[in-house]
Length: 339
Image (tube, rainbow, N blue to C red; front, side, top):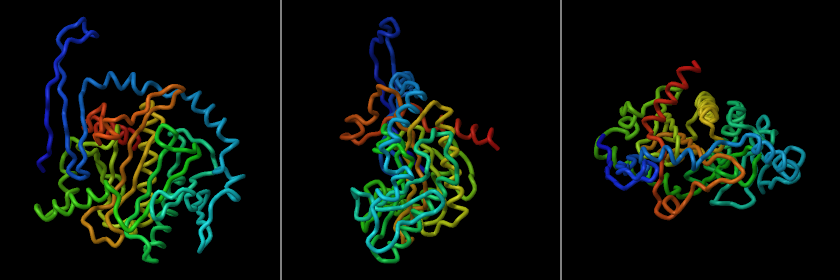
């Protein structure tokens, strides 16, 4: 697989080095699957320490406690505050509850409250929590697909305000529509094009890039993308073409992976994250395999800088502080220690 990368040199007199000449190498990478580009400058590792800072765990728990009283995802309020479907009862499994989103982002938009607990630190999530939520999400997608109301769907989530969550209480979303979302559309198109030109699935060749290959994880194979969508991105793939083909063991493996990655983030001093579980069209017609993407976001502290600025929001470039090769190496070691 030929990977697209452009390297440029930036030179200046650095006041942090007594005004000595400093040379930095900037990489512009294009991801073969998503088609998105990212910028990586090894020198920004130092900036990341300032930019992200350290998670203030004490302030985080204080914030969580303050928001608990007004939280309508907590069990004492959820039963009366959750929206309801017109045609059927809200779905439940274990402590997880699925119901309509009050403010739909797409044709079909639902929320899944994952647990009765108002707050969990990243090392406190369990596979069962995600397993219940993902199972409900897939059950809902299957129902809507059989009703011929949707053709595409994703499961995803934001945790803490730094990652875009309006409510602290652990929850996730299911978004579905008759048209694919922007990144999903590009992934489908790039997969189809690669298959036409090379006769193989694009993921099969991506997984051959050993510097970013992490290893097998149950029914999944893990890797870091060449041009990540966000920092510390860990990806997993299952060789099935529709989310509706996922079985119980696949759901367990995805849930287990989420908890392992979150523990890894916690050990790295991180506190917030986004994730997406995806496939091509739900009828399985596309060459895109099922997968999951997990990225870290800004750390929780009293005063923090938003990690979405014009480079990302308007210019649509991602900026990473650590190479995906290094992230893969670190997570490989983490999984090896935990065996």
